[in-house]
Length: 285
Image (cartoon, rainbow, N blue to C red; front, side):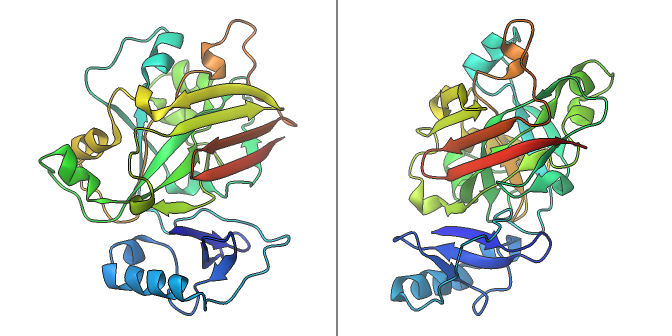
């Protein structure tokens, strides 16, 4: 299923995109697309049955905003330097264990919402990423195979980053990762049954119509299943939590000087095979 949330920010309603590309209203069945729903197999089955019946009300999508596909996210765990080609382009050593940092849930916006360039920013960068959404409580998982059974689905994530804040202002990476609007998510949460191999997805991103990133999740150093298993050794993952699994080569940081960092007026478009597309225009904060 392709689950999504539509409407004005803070007042989104749950919806489903059916096999014909028609937007359907789920409001009569569920209150939201969130961890509570994702952990409830009976509720999900009711949604599947209703979708198959073709009787869900149609939503007129003209002019309708698409919000983040998951509401009330508990935490966003991010994996840094998780693609071989991205590590090479930035001159970084290949990690021997996953690098973990966090983004606050309040960085999440819709897939086509405005992204704000922070005040005093000179190095705002782009990163297309595969987001993993957790569907079952995960703690101390024993195997990669077990880890995949805890995944509810997948989405497109844009891990916007301010590299000066991240790398040159002391401390950890979080200062460059948590500026407002720095995590567009969606358009859809695609349930795990529709993504048979998360290591066989193409990712791409363009800035002002020029292709910058063109990668594949096959380049991940730590595959999705290992990332979920590994993270569960250090913290409990709850339904509705999100893991951003890293970005392939092609970010501004890895390009020759003068590096083409983002500025107000730029348009970023990105997508992942089968998971949909995003488009954001940048403005000054």
